[in-house]
Image (cartoon, rainbow, N blue to C red):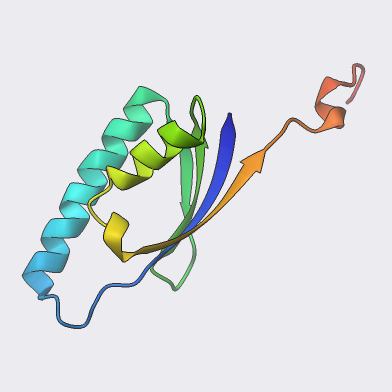
Length: 96
């Protein structure tokens, strides 16, 4: 199943720069593992914000939740999840 996730990061002002750098480093490592596994298909940064749009290809919502909860920044995330279905145009033959 494909899922579109819009994620906004809301870090507390009480977190030190060192702790923030450490969290982002771990986030990058885990994101890399998810991409290498094929579960995180693609990710785009939203300009000017601590936010992204990501596309996950996982078995079901339970597996998506496992992926998202594995991210070190998870507790700082606001996430909007949309389940995607194939559009009928995808199945039309003879499209240019």
